[in-house]
Amino acid sequence: MEKEELVDRAGDIRAGEELDADRLKSYLEPILGSKAANLRLKQFPGGHSNLTYLLESGDESWVLRRPPFGSKVKSAHDMSREFRVLSALKDVYSYGPVPIHFCEDHDVIGCDFYLMNYIEGLVIRREYPIELGLSTDQIRQQLLNFFDVLSELHSVDLVEAGLDNFGKPVGYVQRQVDGWCRRWKDAHTPDTVNVDGTMQWLYDHMPEESGKASVIHNDYKLDNVIFSVEDPLQVIGVLDWEMATVGDPLMDLGCTLGYWVQTSDPDFFRESRTMPSDIEGAPTRGEIIQRFQERTGLSVDNFPFYFCFGLFRLCVIGQQIYYRYYHGHTKDERFAGFLKKAFVLQQMCEMIIRGEITE
Image (cartoon, rainbow, N blue to C red; front, side, top):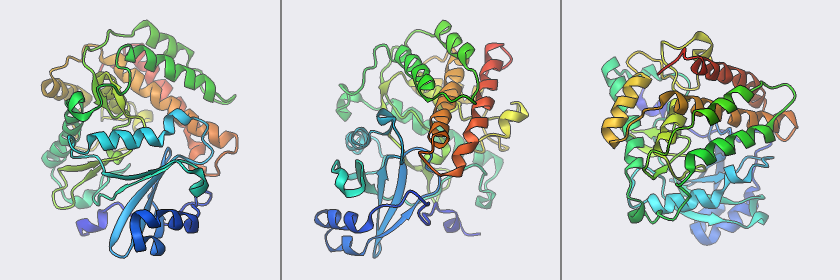
């Protein structure tokens, strides 16, 4: 198989997530010129949160981002915020897509949306593309590069980026714990898991602030980055910036490690993984932390808290998605499985709390 065949491709638009193509074409005509009249619309796979569409005309392509249908969680799907972050980063961080246009006129497709450039490349999802033919050493380097790009983000100069007044870094850890506990209560359904013990443990073990304020992505994971087709070890793009802010980079690391399943983890957690971080050659969480400390100069002294928070946050996000399905706000059958996912993540939190997992 050629590497080009592994490029992340858009396909048919999922039922219930269609856009008003005629209205969109008319709106985009002043921005794209005559190309707007011949736009072809497709949708990228994935997309449990904000939805991503490919717009093509001739040999040119753009990407449109919009919130999910039926979502009531406005703060998690703020298109203007995402557009502002990308606009600020485009000259200081080479991995973000270049934003082109923001629209707040809901008469076009019923919500805010924005247009950005299309970055073509490889996206690694649940199963590792062994067709790449990488050795275990190359896989290790590829995944370490993935974390190095996160460290680069945390090293962006806030003043240079114009983001020194973006977000509220002071008290960030406390607000995150407060916020995600509140979101859990707001998205609770009668059939879900009890997380009261985890929420209390997070409050009881909350560390001091790291003392560093950084741009943080807040959902940095493998299927949110694009690797080069020519050199699959290199990251060329970072996607999905809807939750980006300025805050404590250690919390951002914890969010990413919440996705990081490794070979020593229990079977129930490995079976539920969403990315192939337990492939042979992949670095362990301990090795990742060590490299992160070397790259950023920060000390990760409270790993159990950050890891538990990352898992709990994913539990809440999954519950928010399941809440939409439970109440009939979406017909996407993929969302039904997030009920089981919440139980799995809570089990892992309990193991951390009991001291059975330390890294």
